[in-house]
Length: 237
Image 1: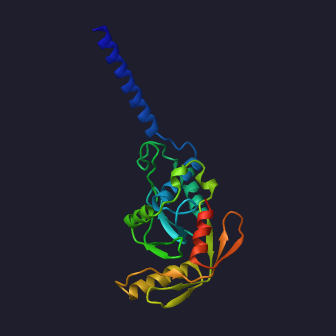
Image 2: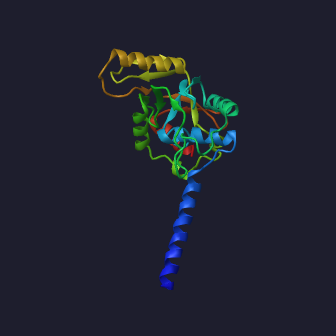
């Protein structure tokens, strides 16, 4: 009986310890505004395979919803950072008990894009993303290296690899081309072409060469082909 009691007591201790450990893991608290911003941006980028550690570069401007459902339009990741800092400074971070976070360290974004958005793939395709499911599907196609990184210090690690320097030329699936002098014009060109060509398969892509500005040091790089763009993206890791 004594041996059985010891085994039972040990089992209770192990189960209790496991229970508290799980609860502690679930209560990942963003103690500072910077922590909260890191977590939010990491969550959104990881979910879509975006930015430096993913396969796709986001085309600005984009609009997104803050945790209070207000909408903000931004022209860069830095503007997202600034908007989130302002929000969390005014409203608090919400901590680990906020419904926006997942469990066991997996963060679910409390902010989300206002769709559609556009991203550029490693092959120079300009991809229109119409909803969250399509964003997740892109992530599934992307190996990426988010598994080697976590939310801590995410903003300081570099949110993007490079920015496209405009103007650029876009070739559509029907072989027609158009020049975009800005990000806004690129969005509009793609929108207008889709509206005029419903049901046409394929994606538009950038016509090379293009120029990109590296976010790490602001240097300008000429990219002459899809292979060079892919190699450049892979080197950003």
